[in-house]
Amino acid sequence: MTAPRAFVVGWPIAQSRSPLIHAHWLAEHGLAGSYERLAVPPDEIEAFLKNLPESGWVGGNVTVPHKETAFRLASERDAVAEATGAVNTLWIEEGKLCGGNTDAIGFLANLDDRAAGWDARPGDAVVLGAGGAASAAAWGLKTRGFRVRLVNRTLARAEALAARLGDDVSAHGWDVVRHLLRDARLLVNTTSLGMAGKDEMTLDLSPLPATALVSDVVYVPLETPFLAAARARGLATVDGLGMLLHQAVSGFERWFGVRPKVTPELRRLLLADLGVVE
Ligand code: ATR
Image 1 (cartoon, rainbow, N blue to C red):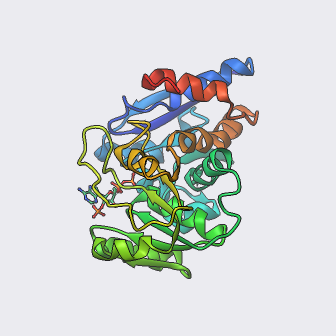
Image 2 (image 1 turned 90 degrees about the vertical axis):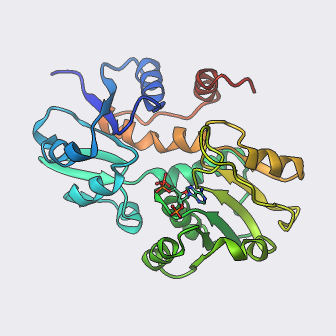
Image 3 (image 1 turned 45 degrees about the vertical axis):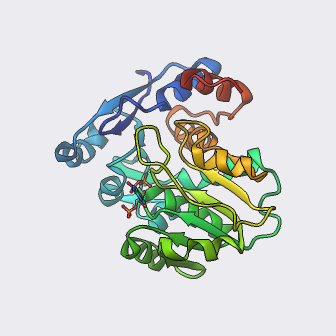
């Protein structure tokens, strides 16, 4: 039998750190197999995905901008994929392309890991953004009993996502964010603001209660200006690296047959690659 080969597909893909994670787990468990970056442009992704069951790959991860196309082309989907409209993990079952979304579980596991007890008293959560990461975070927060306030520059996009996610998720513009922050237990950034090379996030965090937790799904830089501002205010913060690590677990288990662990050693490996000393 040939060693299982998995991939991460996106456009561009050079920035993906997923290969580091899977190579670490393959070595840790002494498994034969590989996990490779694949750059596939938007006009070729449909053909790539349609051909996947016959291609010899055991499956892979899907990243920006292909998660919605993967959702559309998967014959079977898990419940989170159905709820969020995005697929980030693919595998083949009985010759069929199956898709799941592990971003929501990754988002929750990161908070559980880095801020234990964060969901002990659910209330309002403010989620900035309305893209794929926002839908995963909002879905996850809903399952933990939070009322989710989506705040997005393009209000119609937040409204569409709120309608998709159903009860306890509402859509708002940036003009009311100060007001929403006053009651927030949790504030999450899922926009690309604050990402290296993108526009800065200039949100004033002063209305947040002193007990609020602040998290960012961005992890380059590891401490975004948004998190730095929250920390300067004395608020608890959780960076986005753990979401990347935790979302990788179930794909690895499907493709290579062992459920891996997110360890401090794995986090250190990624931090070294990011050039961060903790
Ligand atoms: P992902 O799937 O990774 O979440 P995305 O779908 O590209 O990424 O979404 C990016 C998010 O960042 C969106 O919510 C986007 O707002 P719009 O829906 O209005 O585009 C938000 N975003 C990006 N640049 C922004 C900016 N300069 N100001 C405010 N929001 C911004």
